[in-house]
Image 1 (cartoon, rainbow, N blue to C red):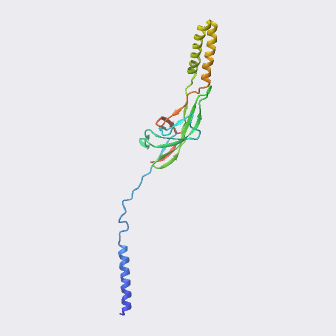
Image 2 (image 1 turned 90 degrees about the vertical axis):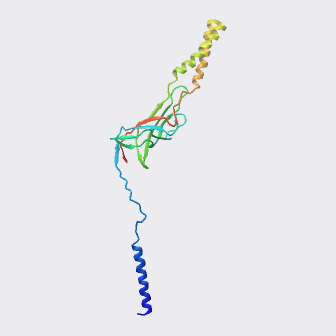
Image 3 (image 1 turned 180 degrees about the horizontal axis):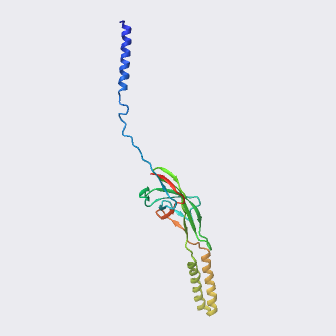
Amino acid sequence: MSIRNFSRIALLSGAFSTLTAVAVLPIAANAGPVERRVVREVTLPAGTLLPLSLDSYVASDTSNVESPVRAHLRRPVIVDGVEVLPAGTPVSGIVTESQRSARVKGRARLAFRFTSMSVDNDHYRVRTSSVVRQAQGTKERDAKTIGIPAGAGAIIGGLTKGGKGAAIGSAIGGAAGTTVVLSTRGKEVRLGRGAAVAVRLLQPVRVAI
């Protein structure tokens, strides 16, 4: 056998040895066990109650229609003994109505609803009932505001000019009280972070758990 042929055989032998060595290396030497996530879909029926705590501040005098509203579940939602939505599940929505209190007529009003929620990094569109709040009326307060200055005016007028003076004083005092009422806005609706509210689903939602 010539030296050249011997060299070629040696090279081929070395190449096969290398390939064999590579072939016998464990392919998944560092691979851990394969984790499989078992997914089950559960339907939250229409009418399901969602007890929420607000994460946003909303108010009739500062919030605008379409302003975002965020909240989270105060406690888990369970269907047939299965926890579908854990406590803390975030939900998002929008302000649908915001009316500031008027100076004479018209009480403040605020409304919002929720449109989405997130569960295990999955996002779901939802349609809920609205949270609606309206400010209390101020008729009793306004009556007192008008009545007190009128009474004081009557006393002062009576002391100075008798009965006629009492009538004049009462009219002047009442006018002053009316001016205060006309220049003062009524109460506003304000809900701070942590405020407890509740809505219901208006449509069923299928959730993967």
